[in-house]
Amino acid sequence: MSKMAPNCDVANLNLAQQGKARIEWAAREMPVLKLIMKRFAEERPLEGVRLVACSHITTETANLARALKAGGADALLIASNPLSTQDDVAAALVVEYGIPVYAKKGEDVATYNQHVRIALDHKPQIIIDDGCDVVATLIKERKEQLADIIGTTEETTTGIQRLRAMEKSGVITFPVVAVNDAQTKHFFDNRYGTGQSTLDGVIRATNVLLAGKTLVVAGYGWCGKGVAMRGRGLGANVVVTEINPIKAIEAIMDGFRVMPMEEAAKIGDIFITVTGNRHVVDTHHFLKMKDGAMVCNSGHFDLELNLTGLAEMSGEKRNLRPFVDEYEIKANGNRVVVLGEGRLINLAAAEGHPASVMDMSFANQALSAEFLRKNHGKLHAGIHTLPEEVDVEIASLKLEAIGVKIDTLTPEMVEYINSWEHGT
Image 1 (cartoon, helix red, strand yellow):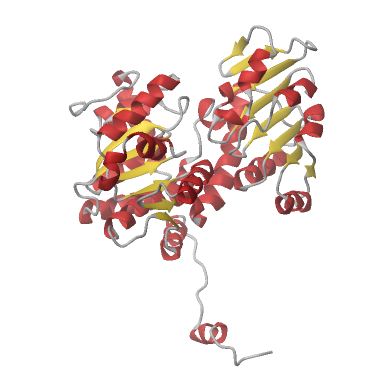
Image 2: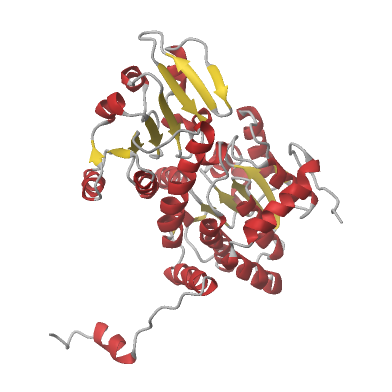
């Protein structure tokens, strides 16, 4: 029987049963988080902690929320992106699991900002952030609440960049766990999750054949590596743009063409940005694009594409199909197609990362919250990496869950690698 709905702002509570079925389906592919949830239910490491999670409200996030609640947390969820919420999942979290959710797919910026402030009204002690909006708003607008903070976590490369700037400015007064820097997060979530789900979003939005197309990937970090790898696997001719010489060489060694965006703009059929920076595709790039070129973003914020500039240099925008908008540039008559309104294409037009990948990412989030609670008062203010042994534990649990065994060192091997006396 459905439970009494707590305070919420979701699109349609009648979608709860559909959302519950999808949440349970995702849970099948999240064995590590299932084990953590079971232990949390027994040990209650987050008992009584007021916790806010700002994340994409997906089936995978729902299973993280269930684990946090099982651990005793008084949790509240908001969306980390206006287009990433799955409305049936939001309804199920509220009705079936009794977790307050403030998120609607397609919410405007004003509503999004209102939800951030509602989250802070919860007076959180732990914040799980995705893009750093909650933490940034806390520091700018709610300084009186800083003393309550046990610590925060951050899921994204973009958020970590913002946090490093905050740390440099001296405004962080609490410990932060950089979940994005855990190996079981960025190696798998960023590379394999973003790689697959980004192209899934492009294909669902457009139904175009990628084989034979020139795919321009802006940025060759872990996300860019994944998109480029999967793009090549689907037959695209992949071009990489970069500002980092080391990453540019790596892309060349991996078999991709590398050139400035200024040159890539002339030949690209599809452009995907994954940099975490602003205006990576700018107005002068749009002017050089061929007629019908498609642009989209899989970085956290839509400002990687200068859509304001594109709108100003174009006539009336035309919506061709869901998540597909066409701009006709007045100067040359060429049409530029923007996918997913420039927001995360893998969540705007598809379902985000597969559950098996998020199993490890959200295991990191759950264990990071536990780590902050257990070490309250012992950690210095600023950015921390989750201890390596936790990373190894997550990877070991994943291998166990999928039935894979690996070798272990013999005592002689341990002695050898820890000694300087043995040579050739």
